Amino acid sequence: MHEFALIQSVLEMVKDSAVQNRIKKVNRVKLVVGKLSMALPDSLHFAFDAIKATDDLFKNANLEIEEREIMVNCQQCQQAFPMEDRYCFVCPSCNSTGIEIIQGRELYLDYYEGDEN
Ligand SMILES: [Zn+2]
Image (cartoon, rainbow, N blue to C red; front, side, top):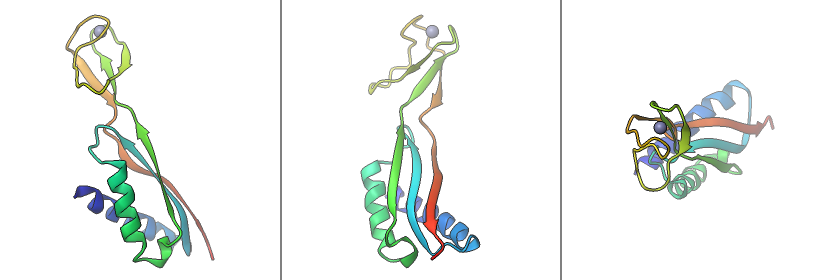
Protein backbone atom coordinates (compact mmCIF):
# COMPACT_ATOMS: atom_id res chain seq x y z
CA MET A 1 0.00 0.00 0.00
CA HIS A 2 2.17 2.83 -1.21
CA GLU A 3 -0.30 5.56 -0.22
CA PHE A 4 0.49 4.79 3.42
CA ALA A 5 4.24 5.25 2.95
CA LEU A 6 3.59 8.34 0.95
CA ILE A 7 1.43 10.03 3.58
CA GLN A 8 3.94 9.01 6.21
CA SER A 9 6.77 10.78 4.41
CA VAL A 10 4.61 13.85 3.72
CA LEU A 11 3.66 14.11 7.39
CA GLU A 12 7.30 13.72 8.43
CA MET A 13 8.16 16.62 6.15
CA VAL A 14 5.36 18.73 7.63
CA LYS A 15 6.45 17.78 11.12
CA ASP A 16 10.06 18.87 10.53
CA SER A 17 8.86 22.18 9.20
CA ALA A 18 6.32 22.61 12.01
CA VAL A 19 9.02 22.08 14.63
CA GLN A 20 11.25 24.66 12.96
CA ASN A 21 8.40 27.16 12.84
CA ARG A 22 7.21 26.43 16.37
CA ILE A 23 3.85 25.19 15.16
CA LYS A 24 2.03 23.13 17.73
CA LYS A 25 -1.05 22.12 15.78
CA VAL A 26 -1.43 21.44 12.11
CA ASN A 27 -4.89 22.30 10.77
CA ARG A 28 -4.63 21.61 7.09
CA VAL A 29 -2.41 19.69 4.74
CA LYS A 30 -2.84 20.10 1.02
CA LEU A 31 -1.56 17.70 -1.59
CA VAL A 32 -1.56 17.94 -5.35
CA VAL A 33 -2.11 14.54 -6.89
CA GLY A 34 -1.96 13.92 -10.63
CA LYS A 35 -4.17 11.20 -12.00
CA LEU A 36 -1.14 9.42 -13.39
CA SER A 37 0.61 9.32 -10.04
CA MET A 38 -1.28 6.13 -9.21
CA ALA A 39 -2.12 7.36 -5.72
CA LEU A 40 -5.82 7.01 -4.94
CA PRO A 41 -7.38 9.91 -3.00
CA ASP A 42 -9.53 7.53 -0.93
CA SER A 43 -6.48 5.57 0.13
CA LEU A 44 -4.59 8.77 0.88
CA HIS A 45 -7.42 9.95 3.14
CA PHE A 46 -7.56 6.57 4.83
CA ALA A 47 -3.81 6.58 5.50
CA PHE A 48 -3.90 10.19 6.68
CA ASP A 49 -6.66 9.45 9.21
CA ALA A 50 -4.82 6.38 10.49
CA ILE A 51 -1.52 8.21 10.98
CA LYS A 52 -2.90 11.47 12.38
CA ALA A 53 -4.59 9.59 15.22
CA THR A 54 -1.16 8.60 16.51
CA ASP A 55 0.32 12.11 16.62
CA ASP A 56 -0.99 15.11 18.60
CA LEU A 57 0.47 17.51 16.06
CA PHE A 58 -1.97 16.25 13.43
CA LYS A 59 -4.92 15.38 15.65
CA ASN A 60 -7.19 18.09 14.20
CA ALA A 61 -5.70 18.27 10.74
CA ASN A 62 -7.67 17.93 7.53
CA LEU A 63 -6.26 16.54 4.36
CA GLU A 64 -7.15 18.38 1.19
CA ILE A 65 -6.39 16.83 -2.16
CA GLU A 66 -6.33 18.65 -5.46
CA GLU A 67 -6.54 16.20 -8.33
CA ARG A 68 -4.88 17.12 -11.60
CA GLU A 69 -6.18 15.84 -14.89
CA ILE A 70 -3.81 14.21 -17.31
CA MET A 71 -2.77 16.71 -19.98
CA VAL A 72 -0.79 15.82 -23.05
CA ASN A 73 0.87 17.85 -25.76
CA CYS A 74 1.14 16.88 -29.40
CA GLN A 75 4.69 17.39 -30.66
CA GLN A 76 3.43 17.48 -34.24
CA CYS A 77 0.85 20.27 -34.10
CA GLN A 78 1.74 21.63 -30.62
CA GLN A 79 -1.79 21.34 -29.31
CA ALA A 80 -2.39 20.52 -25.66
CA PHE A 81 -5.44 18.52 -24.68
CA PRO A 82 -6.71 16.49 -21.73
CA MET A 83 -6.32 12.78 -21.92
CA GLU A 84 -9.60 11.04 -21.26
CA ASP A 85 -9.99 7.85 -19.27
CA ARG A 86 -8.86 5.69 -22.13
CA TYR A 87 -5.11 5.86 -22.50
CA CYS A 88 -5.13 6.91 -26.10
CA PHE A 89 -1.77 8.21 -27.25
CA VAL A 90 -2.99 9.66 -30.53
CA CYS A 91 -3.53 13.36 -31.19
CA PRO A 92 -7.23 14.08 -31.80
CA SER A 93 -6.50 16.88 -34.26
CA CYS A 94 -3.69 15.47 -36.45
CA ASN A 95 -3.60 11.76 -35.50
CA SER A 96 0.08 11.95 -34.67
CA THR A 97 1.40 9.54 -32.05
CA GLY A 98 4.12 11.99 -30.98
CA ILE A 99 2.47 12.77 -27.67
CA GLU A 100 4.09 13.86 -24.46
CA ILE A 101 2.54 14.02 -21.03
CA ILE A 102 2.77 17.52 -19.59
CA GLN A 103 0.60 17.16 -16.49
CA GLY A 104 -0.76 14.35 -14.34
CA ARG A 105 2.36 12.76 -12.87
CA GLU A 106 2.77 15.28 -10.07
CA LEU A 107 2.43 14.38 -6.46
CA TYR A 108 3.59 16.91 -3.92
CA LEU A 109 2.81 18.78 -0.75
CA ASP A 110 1.32 22.11 -1.79
CA TYR A 111 1.18 23.71 1.65
CA TYR A 112 0.13 23.18 5.22
CA GLU A 113 -1.42 25.44 7.84
CA GLY A 114 -1.04 25.37 11.57
CA ASP A 115 -1.16 27.29 14.84
CA GLU A 116 1.64 28.22 17.19
CA ASN A 117 -0.33 27.24 20.25
ZN1 LIG B 1 -1.43 16.87 -33.23
